[in-house]
Image (cartoon, rainbow, N blue to C red; front, side, top):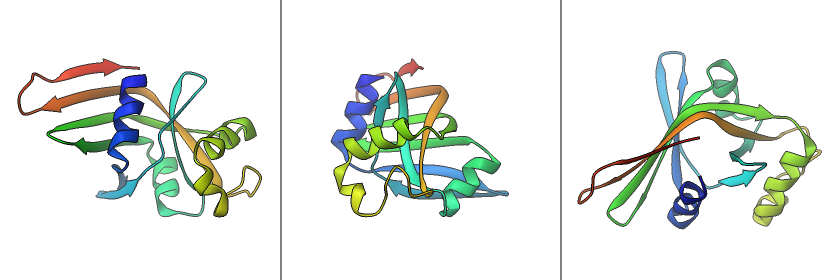
Length: 130
């Protein structure tokens, strides 16, 4: 999983896909953090993406770096513990101007039953499950 997080951080931006009813929704994200051995992302509870993930936790992210790309699919599960929120905010100090661990809006979610696949035009795909 560390390789997955490293790729996401080096790519700086990844795209998170959710579903809204029968409509796919994709948007850029930038947070990727390991806490207690799980891959976490962060959003705000007031955002549509949060509502979509609570209605259907199946999600997929995709990031590109050079000629390689990474796709991670699984279920995103909310971790409502203050420690998890604070860990994310500590890892991304730039978020602290918009979010705090106790604001009632900051939400962190971790991947469960995830499959990460590294792709390249020159190599066979490599799959990691966590």
